Image (cartoon, rainbow, N blue to C red; front, top):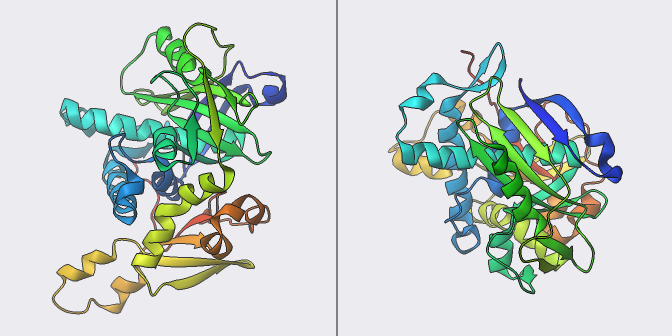
Length: 323
């Protein structure tokens, strides 16, 4: 497994233990799971596209694997990344920033559920009393039932210190969620130009300048929307099967089953047996609003198939290509 460097700084007393420098392993399965929830482009309304939007996210995720590799220094961008044109680099950089923000917010702040603010707002799960268009990218819920706001940015070149200040300012404009201050309002800057890739998670005191926002989030609606694309995908590509990890049962469906439509004859069984499957804890599939209680006792999973939010990737998946 390849690793990235993580620096956490300026977190308040309640999260003081988070501050420091760490290395964190990042597996391909973790990346694919992150793609499901935050890997889409900003212009993609995954809730109106539903299962098609989720499928699009996986396409983005798989294509981006082409430029990540495991070097002696850790997880790095391949030299071939420089050959992309500007628009391609912009899309990939945005994607890497969002996905690594999702992974690191989970490992460092125990935020199991992190989602796009705009998508929650469009779905009606989140309402904004007033404010500006400069709010943070992502809103998340942790294992203590606290809310967090994250502004994520990926950079393939060095950046000025003002980028962190601006990102923090955007997330800090959210001063109340459901009547309480968010637990953290962080800037997450992913430095793709470093070896290994480095992630800064910073929560300095916010400036009082600029408009503030107060949010209301319907908790049941938040979880229903978080899992909506996955549940619709599983329904669309049924009949699905079940997988078990320990005592936990997962509803699954093959990833990219539409590939079979282009094959004029049945594929050999080894092909079918080698397909990846997307899985969701069966109890969440039935009642996504119950997710916080259902994930409390997830089984020990040494292979990393199951994410902390109950989303799983089953099937053979090699680790990163070595440079």
